[in-house]
Amino acid sequence: MTTKKEIVMSGIRPTGFLHLGNYFGAIQNYVRMQDDYDCYFMVADLHSLTTHPDTKALKANVHRVLAENIACGLDPEKVALYCQSHIHETGELYLYLNMLAYKGELEKTATFKEKVRMHPENINAGLLTYPVLQTADILLHRAKYVPVGKDQEQHLEMARNFANRFNHRYGFVFPEPQAFNFNNELIKVPGLDGGGKMSKSENQMATLYLADDDETITKKVMKAKTDSGPVEKNTPKPDYIGNIFLLMKLVSDETVINKYEAEYNACTIRYGEMKKQLAVDMIKFISPIREKVNTILADEKYLENIMQLGAGKARKSAVATMQVAREAMRLNYTETPF
Ligand code: ADP
Image 1 (cartoon, rainbow, N blue to C red):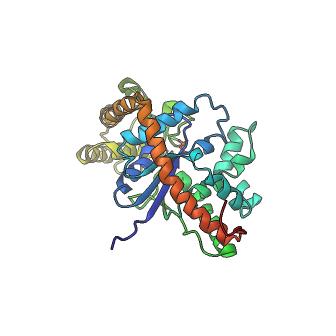
Image 2 (image 1 turned 45 degrees about the vertical axis):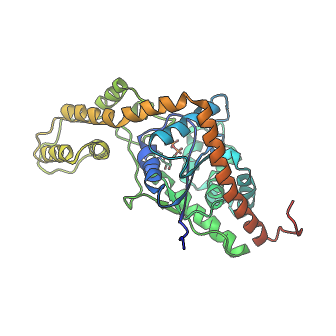
Image 3 (image 1 turned 180 degrees about the vertical axis):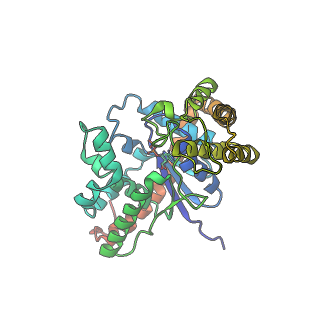
């Protein structure tokens, strides 16, 4: 007897080039989960419309996210790698869940408040209900695990609330989804400017993109904020220095990290040298991915086939879930569905 694999779902918006935060918060976990779980990974093109209503570059951006996922090691034969807008059932579940989501809780969401602050000219209802759409994406596959970065913790809590409300009102349909990272802790990859996080659309000089060329990587790393170094042994690191160590832990060998930790504690550290080493290790990490992305992007037909394959798998799961959800909601007035 084959045991059923646990279900995993996650997505990334096609709003620009992917960066180290997307890699370590999300994609690295996708790749590690693809053999042992039943995985649904999507390009969240509908989510991108909440902040990026101009769709001229959308197709190219969707292709890029697909290519970047594959270049990082995701196998479209093993997982369902698909486009959100190809699964029409998403809109239906989003509608039902919207009746279970309250204006007050949506307005309190940290990401909503942040976006209102940054784009006061475009506070649309889609932005307000962003966590509901995200919940629909997850519940559509009745997923248990959602590999995401730390910035998504609150959204996952909301997804659990919406799932529980549905189950409570209509009977059990949806398992509670949980945020997931292999290291047990969700990660936030910090920006190189000492504050904030790496991000697709904001603070570009502080973000390392998987598409950055070697020279750009070096330039960005060398500009990272430092100071003249600690003057007392074993002093706690200021945030911006801690961030550089964190980035080093992501891409450098342990011996390298230990060397700089020891130098920091002995007050002999030279940040210029440390950043040069970090730049070398970053280039070693990023450049093979960048080259693979370019090869994949050149083959539009391949990307088209990948999207079709993924949509087929995702739709099968979505259709099955919606049948159960509609029945639970008593929306099945006819014998044969039409
Ligand atoms: P962005 O915020 O760059 O536009 P998305 O909202 O599309 O990225 O998020 C895609 C995935 O990448 C999510 O799982 C998110 O948690 C993760 N992620 C984004 N930025 C970071 C970061 N700086 N550190 C860790 N994970 C991140």
